[in-house]
Image (cartoon, rainbow over all chains, first blue to last red; front, side):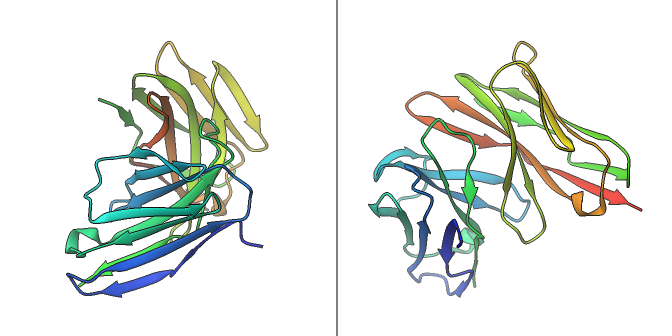
Amino acid sequence: DTAVSQTPKYLVTQMGNDKSIKCEQNLGHDTMYWYKQDSKKFLKIMFSYNNKELIINETVPNRFSPKSPDKAHLNLHINSLELGDSAVYFCASSQWQANTEAFFGQGTRLTVV
Amino acid sequence: GQSLEQPSEVTAVEGAIVQINCTYQTSGFYGLSWYQQHDGGAPTFLSYNALDGLEETGRFSSFLSRSDSYGYLLLQELQMKDSASYFCAVTIRGGGFKTIFGAGTRLFVKA
């Protein structure tokens, strides 16, 4: 069983489109995250949710809208995609906020053309 | 602001020991973690230090000195499969807990 699963694994789309990435964890964790990893492998936190509530929003453009229908799911919707959005997006979860052992999904490689 | 520094690349031979250093400047420091990431893969948690000292997990050990804002990851008996990127990550507390990753150290293990 995959602990943190995100879909799709690859996403190629045109500028201006809207796309979503889904994430689910079956670990019973309270906290979920979205990270963005750029071409230089720099891993930057975007959002953090704890029990469906937004805890951290790292000044991400409001074209990015996370949604957490329950604590096992954290989806990411991106409007009006731009070339600079091309990156690998990782979903992750941890048992609770202060627990630093995060489990990452396999990543979604987004390419905007 | 918050910053972490670690070397961009390290090369070592199979069987050797390598140390990857990490220095940080943060406020609200809570703990230091290390993650491994193979090319095309996801980051995988290796270890965590909240208090000063050495934590050992098999071939990997991690050290923290809070007074020096410094930590390191020690990899012993290097194997080819250890070739990967290693990230130090600082968790800070302030309006919630947040983990900030360093830029990563690319480790090349040679035969």
